[in-house]
Structures are given as structure tokens and as C-alpha cells.
Image 1 (cartoon, rainbow, N blue to C red):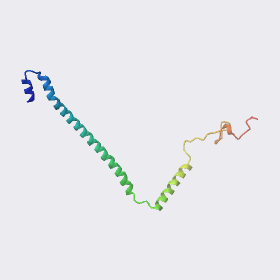
Image 2: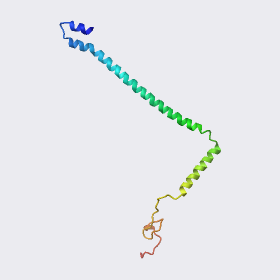
Image 3: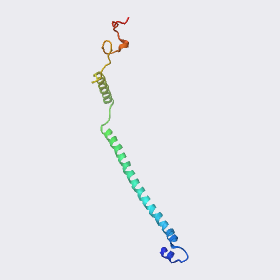
Image 4: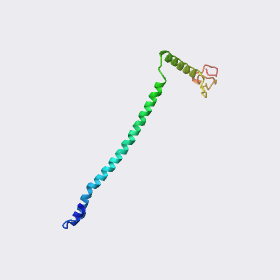
Length: 122
């Protein structure tokens, strides 16, 4: 309607008037698109937040389902853990090679601290 009136005005160029009329329409379209993008982003963030909350609640529920830990049961668990650690330390490690002396080939020390002094060095 305004565009038709602008075209009927004979003293001015209708293109500048039409451009001025179309400018608010373009701005409104940009705002609508921006609002739609923000709405999508907010929805995805809310879904991610909900998933994180559910994960935390699952962990809490799993811990709570194991029941109440009494003093005796706690001490038993600690003793078992300490025993397991001690056994792990006592078992020889597979693949571990002890260093040897390059003079006498015995394990546990090196050539600088070799106890055998019969190599002809006086």
C-alpha cells in the first residue's frame, strides 16, 4: 500500500522510498531468525543439562543402593584392601630385570660398588 503511494509521487525517486519502507521488514525478519536460532540453542543446552543431571543422579543412586557401611564392615574392607596391596607388592613383577654388576654379573649392585676385589686392581 505504501509502495503504491510512493510510486505515484512524481517529484521523488520511488526506489529510495521503497528501500526505506522495506528496511523495517528486513530487520524484523533478521530478529525472527535470530530468535529461532536462540530458541534452538537454548533447547539443546537444556537437553545437555538434563542429561548431565541424570548421570549425576544415577551415580548417587548406585552408591546409595549399596547400603549403609558399618564400622566393622568398613574395617574389614580396609583390612582386605591392605592385604591385597601387600600381596601385590610381594609378588615379583613379570618382566622386571634387576641390574647386575658388569664385573662379576651378580644382581643388586654395579661395578663401582662391587665387593669382589680380586680383579687385579691394587
